[in-house]
Amino acid sequence: MVRRYGHFDTAEDATQEALIAAATTWSAEGRPDNPLAWLITVASRRLTDLLRSEQARRRRQEAVDQWTLPAERVALGADEHANATDDTLILLFMCCHPSLSPASQIALTLRAVGGLSTLEIARAFLVPEATMTRRVTRAKQTIKDSHIPFRLPASTDFGERLAAVLHVLYLVFNEGYAATGGASLYRTDLSSEAIRLCRMLRQLLPDDAEVTGLLALMLLTDARRAARAGPGGELIQMAEQDRSLWNAAFIREGVELVTRALQQGQPGQYQIQAAIAAVHDEAPNAAETDWAQIVALYEVLLGAGTNPVVQLNYAVAVGMARGPVAGLAVIDALSTDARIADDYRLYSVRAHLLEMSGDLAGARETYQAAAQRAPNLSHQRHLNGRAARIARLDRRMR
Image (cartoon, rainbow, N blue to C red; front, side, top):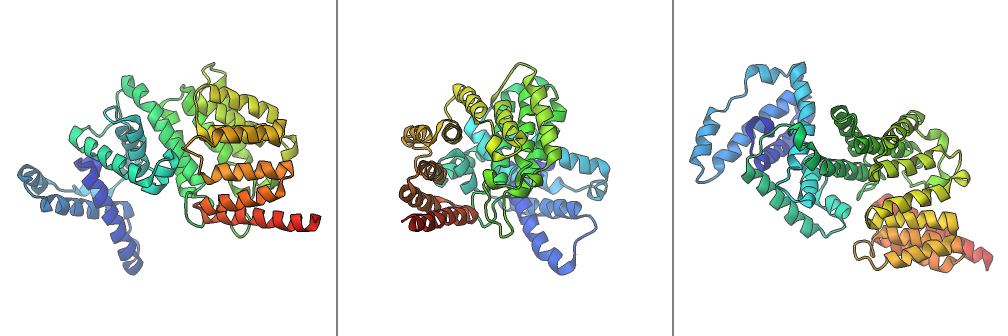
C-alpha cells in the first residue's frame, strides 16, 4: 500500500481495516481464490475513503479521484508476489531512514514491519509504554512529512541504515522467541519472520559479517525452540531440555555461518552472541557446557558497550563458571541500573543464584517477586513453580 500510494500512516490504517474485514468476511463467505489481491483491493478502497474524509485536502482529493487498481495488478502473478515479498525489506529500510533518530527508526519498524504492540516495543527498549507511544507517533509524522520514496536505498546509503535494520530484526526475533505477554511462551510467527527477513538481507549483503552473524544467532537460538516448552506449554530451562529435540540442521548452519563471519576478522556484537549460542548448542549436555569460554565472550561483548540485558546474562555465566557468590556480585551492581532494576528477569536470575548458594528462603521469596513482575503467563507459572518446589524442599530439610 505504501509502495502504491504513499501516505504511510493512512496506508497502515487501511491495511488494518482490510485485515479486519477479511477476518469477518472470510469466515462467513469462505477464503477468496487470491487472498492477497482481495486484501489489496479492499485496503485500496478504504484508503481512498480515508483520504476523502480528511478536511482541507483538495489536491489530495484530486489525486485520489484518479487512482485505479489495474486489472493485471489485481491478478497478482508471480512478479507481484515477488514484489509483495520484497516490499517488507524495502519498508524495513524505509523506516530506518536517517531523518529519524535511531530509537525512532527501530520503534517504527517494529510497529510497521514486525507487527509488535506498543507495549512489546516499550519492553524491548526498557521504557514506559506512554513514552513509546509518543515516539512511534512522532516517527510516523516524520515519515509522512518527509515524502521518502518507497524503494531500497542506494548501495552507498546502506551503511547508515544497516545498524538500525539489524537491531530491529534482533528485537523482532527476541519477541518471537520470548513473548512479552499472553499465555504462550513464544510467537513462532515473529521469530520465523525475523529469520526470513535476515536471510533476504544476507542475500543482499552476503559479505557483511554482522548480517551473517545475526542470522547465525537466530538459527542457533531458534534451534532450541522445540525443547523449551513441555506438553502444557510450561517453560523448560536449557539445563533440563531434551537436546535430542534441538534442530540439528539449524545448529549446523548457524555454526558454519558464525565461523565464516568471525574469520573475516571484524567481530561485532551479533557475531559474538552467535559464538556464545554455538558454545551452548555444541555442548553434549548442560554439565559439559564451557562456561569459562562463555564468560570470556561476554566480557568481549561488554567491552563494546553497556547493555543491562547482556550484563544479566553475564551474571548467569559468572555464577556458573565461578560460583553463585561471584554471580550475585554482578547482580548487585546491576540492581542500580533503573532500566532493569525492577525487571522480572533480574529477580529470576538472582533467585537462581540464591538457590545455587543454598539460600532457599531468599530464593523462594525472590522467585515469587519475579513471578509478580513477569508479563507472560508461562513465565509466571514457571517462576511460581520454582518457588513452590523450593518451599517443599525447605520443609523436607527441616
